[in-house]
Each structure stands twice: as structure tokens, then as C-alpha cells.
Image (cartoon, rainbow, N blue to C red; front, side, top):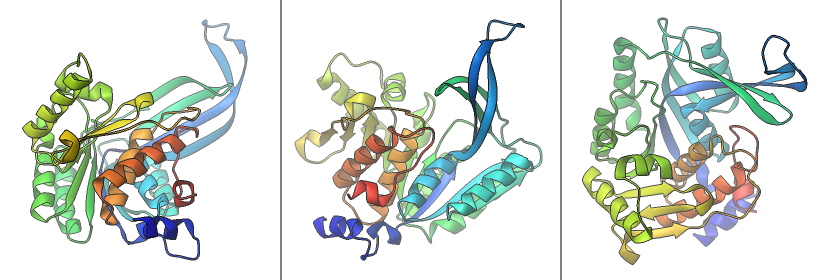
Length: 321
């Protein structure tokens, strides 16, 4: 492990993450940012008037997971659905720039999911969402391609944003496990039964409590986590806990619990931090790293990315200074 870390910190030696082959499947979106100055209140309503001076577009959702994995040096394929619209075309172009093999199925009956954020004085003033659910036919075509792509990847990341792109997730998990692939899932909603059989689930604290109930103390939290892990047939459950760090629950030593405290640093923006965590986990595991080390690596990456604005990424040089 130490040799791999030393190699990653030396630009003369190849990045150990470069041999990882990761397949990301899920709900993609285009994150749009409008930046401007706020100097007055609108005479039409008690709201600020933003004079937009700069715009920016970034891949979001599962596309941000893929972007994070590619930034670490992994070979990444992204499988998803977008509309036949300008936003879908922009997303495809951005993914190509990030060296991601984007297998985007176009559905003429939907619009590509877009999250528009209006920023004034370095604060988010408004978010506007545009989204529709993909149709059955395009999702069936995506599932057929998913089965074909499995054999050429080491790990699968299923990024569920609740936009309808993972309606066949139970079938996807079962197919990946039959193929001997590690399956990591970033869940959404209160129905975790659909993730049964995955290798690793990564809910945040709020998502976990929504399903497992609110714990009275740390021992109760652990008992609820282990009960959920066993009920879902997971090898491990990782609960991200914001300023408290993250806790891994498995069946190994120390009663199957590993807690990693959050790194002490200024938090600027938590947008996309969960994407960074699961992307780092997937890349590290696909490259041969043990799960406990992969969790520590993901915690380090999360601490770095929250100090950046928006859906940002982490470079190997930041993880291995």
C-alpha cells in the first residue's frame, strides 16, 4: 500500500489508479451557474436583482461521479439517458473533455435534467430545476448495453438521483454480481430494498435515518446500521456523516465498524461531496485497494472537495501530496 501511495505522489511513476476501469450508471444532469452582482431590490417584488456577468456549465449527478473518477486517472465509462436537446449535447461535449467514454442514450420525449443556480455575492440565491422521466424503450436499450459493458470493467457505480434512470437497478445489481463485479450504490429515497445484493451502499446520515430510524446513541446507530446491512445482503454499509466524518459497517474486525473523522478544514460548498466519495471509493477498490484504505482515501477526497465551489473534483496530486 505504501509503495502505491509513493508512486502516486511521484509524477515520474504511473498513477496506480490508471489501471482501474469503472462503469458509472445513473441519472445525469447539467449543472448551470449564473454569477452576478446584486446591487438593488426589484421594484416588482421583494427579491434581489442579479446582474449576470458570467456563466458556467459542469456535468452533474452521475456525470459528476464519472468526472470525479476520471480526474483520479481511472478509465471511466458513463451510461445514462439524456434528451435530444442542447443541454444533452453540451453534457456530451463536457464529458468528452474530461476523457470520459459517454454512452448517452437520447430520448426525444424528455428534456435533459438541468439544475440552474443563480449566484450573487458568492451565495446561492436561487435554484431552478428542469427534469422529466425517461421512457421505457430507451431504458430497456440502456439495460442491454449495460450487460455488454460489464465484462470490460472492474467496478460498477450506480448513482441514483431519483430521476427515473435506474428503474432496472435490481436487475443491474444482480447481473453485476453474477459477473463478479464490485457494485457501489449511492441511494435515494426511502426504499432501500431495491439495492439488495449490492457490495456497498453509501447513504448520508439523513438518508440512513429516513430508512433505519433515528438512533438514540452511537451503539444504537451501529445496531441499526448492521441490521440494515444484513437485511439488504450488503458486504458493507458506509454512512457519510457530514462534519462527523464517515463510518463503515461490515462483518470484519472491531465488530465490523470503522469510523473515520472528518478532516479539519474550511467548508466552502458541500455540493457533489457524495459524488466525490463514491467515485473515490470505486476507483480505489477497482485499482486493488482494500476497503478500509479506500474509505480513508474517500474521506480525504471529501475534505478536499468541500473547500472548492460547486461540483468540483480532486486530483491525484491532492490525495498524495
